[in-house]
Amino acid sequence: MKGFAKLETAITIVALLVFSSCTGTVFAADDDVIRIAVVGPLTGTLAFGGNEVKNAIELAVEKRGVALGKKIEFEAADAADSAQSISEFERLYAKGFRIFMGSYGTFSDLAVQAKVDEYGAIMMSAAGWANEYTEHKIKNYFHWTPRVAVFGARLGEYMPEYAKKYLGIEKDKLRVALIWASNYEYVAVAAREGLKAAGITPVYEEGYPIDRKDFTALIANLQTKKVDVVVPCQGSADGVPFRRKMVEMDYKPPLLFAMGLIYDQPDFGKQGPDIVDGCVVMSYTHPFIRRDGAPGLEDFAESYKAKHGWYPLTHATQTYAATLFMLDMIEKAGAYDVDKIREAIEAADVPKGKYPNYWGVKFDEHHRNVGAGDPLAIGQWQKGALVTVGTEEIAVGKPIIPWDPSKLQ
View 1 (cartoon, rainbow, N blue to C red):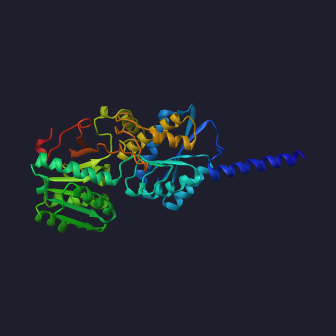
View 2 (view 1 turned 180 degrees about the vertical axis):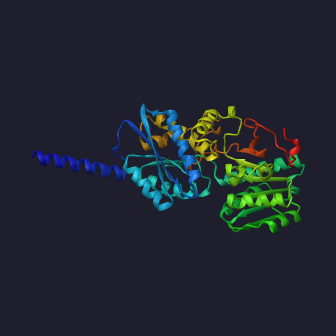
View 3 (view 1 turned 90 degrees about the vertical axis):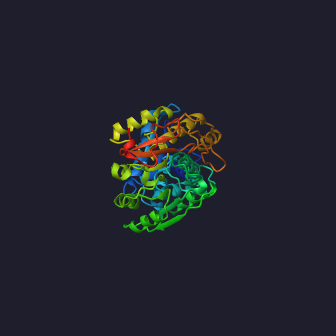
């Protein structure tokens, strides 16, 4: 009978574990641990971005150490596609993980977010900007950072102001060119909408295949059109050779005003001042803003560099801030309980200046952070460094438009 009793107990335990895995209502995990995970690319072509996000979450967990008086356990899972993302999510879920931060690469976040309601987990994305992140209202999904639609809207606000202030051209006279690689057409769509809202119709538009190598004809067209502002939507594969060809052809538009992508990345800066200097770019929060304008940014940026050897990407900075917020919401919820944490996030109304990204935090009915991107950081490459020149509370320098190297300090 004793053997039967032991078998019965074992069966009961297995049943509880299965029930927990399927419903999320019973936690088989150790009650003394708070578990946070991320699923995304840690190897392959998107590995650098995926590891930036992982590193940021890891550092936030190290800084806090505990939540609700319990140790925080963090695990990152590598995923190369949607199917692997779901598989890794399910594996982590079975281990007791219920809180998931977003990664780098749209495929991983969209795959995981589609599962969180079904499983009773919760997720917050902080490194992605595709509009489709929030197309479906998912009860347990939140989006921390501004989507590409916000970037497009800000383009329509910021760029004409810069053109008027530094070029002396009113927006109704502004000659704008919009160019994009095929894989960034969705960015061009957002840019076009932002320009349209501002009453600006580009005088020249061109999309091209991502594998394009020769930009001679495109640049010749820009010269012929006498463009005042070039708005490029480009990645490393096309943005770098495009800029190199501009320099080779001595083409200097009065203003190049980019919406992130390659133009605010370390790989762009590595091309050197001759290639990058003068470009203006809208960006997320990054380590090169005035750090006293973003509480905690100084500590994060220097700690990250000390640990990894370089300053973090914009995506890492956003993820670090979002992870700190998530840990605060766990504390506010008072329990490692998905429903209570969701309610705490929905009720959050945090003013600017609380987190290292300096934005406020308030989620709308679609679980989008309406404080995100208010404002965006505007930078200009000067002496091979991305210097924040826009937004008074975070600016560290002044723009030079049109670009004139002799005016550098």
